[in-house]
Image (cartoon, rainbow, N blue to C red; front, top):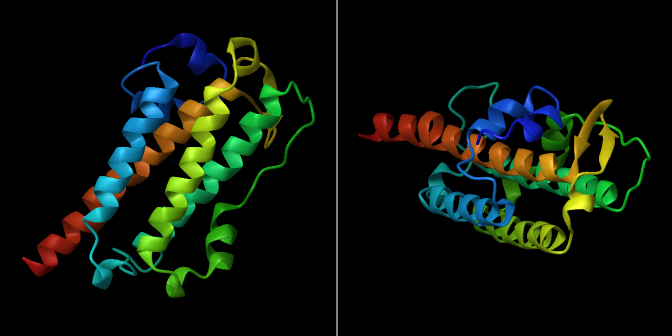
Length: 178
């Protein structure tokens, strides 16, 4: 995606995520990344759910938990900004969220269902806001965003982690077993 306004309305780290997105159609891209996520996580067997390719990296289930958690947080921020709320929002520490989530007892299939519920709610937020609401600038974690840039950041973040699952987790698992 090469829309300079999107890149200019978000912190520089978002550029990487924006580059992973094919079009400027938020709703279409939410749906495409939903399908991608379902496809990727459907390739994971129950024996692989707690696999991590390196000791200091998250397990497959923790990666999906992270995708869900960050979508919830970014969607909340987008909702607040779309309502022209100027309140500065705090940042989060993603590793603390994962450490405190205790994912080992949760089935991957349950996380996939939770992802679908969260994605459905996120999509409804974006279905019901217009351009002026999408473009209100707010501050989160001491950085400026709009609801529009947060939407694209969520999508790119989702794609990024699905790509990691495919290459670093499933690719290595197949090599080990193959």
